Image 1 (cartoon, rainbow, N blue to C red):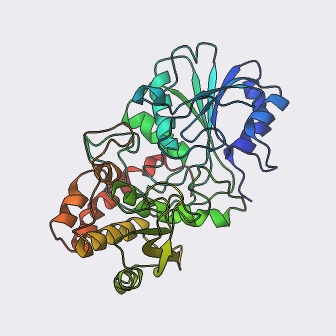
Image 2 (image 1 turned 180 degrees about the horizontal axis):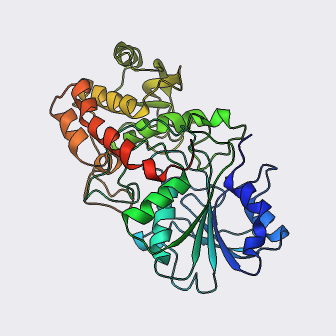
Length: 387
């Protein structure tokens, strides 16, 4: 079984004795024995002063884009890093005055717009230039560490779902991203990485021997994480991405979608590693709550072959081509940003949306991000800590 950075750290926790510690964590921060990190810290004599929780809260009780305020029932003070304004994404004034070391330990899912590593990056910005150590306890990338997919975030399209200028599927761990971000932004941060033992870049999460703990309300399984880098783009459209069902990001649809015909068209694309099954479903919240709508269920047939970003782009292009009178991109405020459509913030620029609306082929759209994949695959090499 892979040994996470948390378990490696607990073997050498004497390094934190006599220091005042803060923890950035949620319910995924557990030991191999399924003990929460904060309990292990306090049991081991570490002076844990407070816990900072990311979006969704410490036990992932809140839905996406819902401000997290009071969190009770803990033996330690909890400070939310996801409130009702952009300023709430960083630690509040005074919350680090009595802290010597900040420890980050949250399971990521391997997609640029999943916000936990973005919380990590913003926290690093907050302590830059201060005498506070920032320690990242590394965990596996559930999508593996080899494949890079999708376009790089362009300047001007930064948001809380776009902090790193990297492809959507980056193939890096949280610690590797921290090293990259420190250098890319020239941050004066005392960064300490506690690496995993036994993890290899070829490993998907199922290969690690670790149990999956849902890091957020709509990430119940590793299969969900696998399709998320592409299917999350549906958040930027009027089509349901499956929130409000027990199969988020695997099921999708809208009242205007005819399941059998649409699923058949998607299957004709012969996308690698996937199959679309026609379904009807009724979300209990979010888009089309309480309505029975048509759509498709995305089956992953080959986890090593699937290209989730390509899959998501293909679904959205087909929706636009078939249902142009009903399908639309959303232009509301999204993750504290009103400058660009939500889809563009997720995709990293307006290019893919413009190519879809301009009638470009799927092959041409896919070709548009290949140079980014090749360049980033080279650029990330100095930061990779695992073979």
